[in-house]
Length: 345
Ligand code: ACO
Image 1 (cartoon, protein in one colour):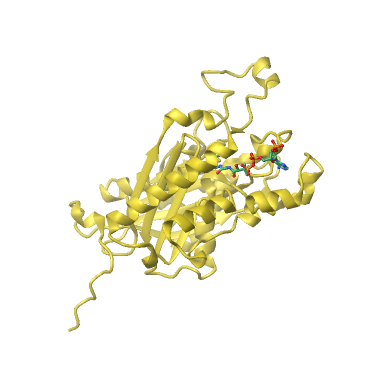
Image 2: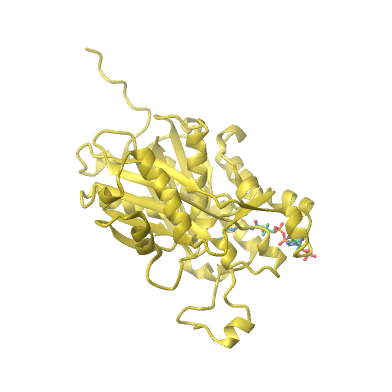
């Protein structure tokens, strides 16, 4: 009998006492609202141009949720697709994690609303806030529950209705963002393909670079917070840009080091879809070829916590990613937060 070929990477799980367990991604799914907002439409709202937006960001259009559609609706639709593809019934889900910065409301958690919409009666549910890094943070949290054998099936969703917090009078930010959701079904599947490692980081000292100050305990909603437009997303674009490139490269390099692989072994790198120039700079610094970088931001803009999940779904659905390939997810966002994951797909 032939022995199995030696793996071409180190599995960091093997150094923990996980006894052949794997946190496998059984399936992914996504949902994008129907309405398309093109750069030409934005030209009618603020002083901007298709040419500026395309050359400075790479974005051509983004999706906008309907007024009656909330983040939980987008999340539930993405989750249903992922569950169906995984062949998992909603009643089998043990835990729902929703990564979002645009919850339906202050509380209860959007994850609880998703639980009800899916009919996932057995599932515990909570939200996770790590902005654009939220999906990667969610994968790590979900993985911990799987590997500790606390739960067998965890649904991780990144979902945003960012257009609900976009300041449509600020051309610096309103051209960048869109709505959408992506979901992954994590399962304990012994000796299967799955998550190899996740690295997470944060720097609260730079929390002022991207934020929405109004409506929390520091600036509770008042006439004054509304007049001062504190309930909208604010961003220091240039500073964010510089920090994003450095943090994403550091996280990706650390994740590869832990798996003892180099960039050439990764089939597909799925970065947070914020800005084409950030993605190009990260790819270049990591020594990746343009073919390795997955980019779909021209269609959807920056969907924060949903961005990596939506792109992962598209990479899988389009056949760009095959079972057994190594894929790296890498993201950066408000907090500041960042993260990178290596997955044997
Ligand atoms: N249309 C036309 N002109 C514009 C627009 C616009 N939409 N936006 C800004 N400008 C102008 C500015 O006013 C400025 O004009 P000035 O020179 O007369 O002052 C000029 O264009 C250049 O502005 P910069 O801010 O220097 O443009 P930059 O090249 O830095 O691009 C951008 C701005 C796209 C925001 C970029 O900095 C960026 O992508 N930053 C990172 C964003 C990001 O990654 N966010 C991720 C996290 S988001 C989250 O966590 C929710």
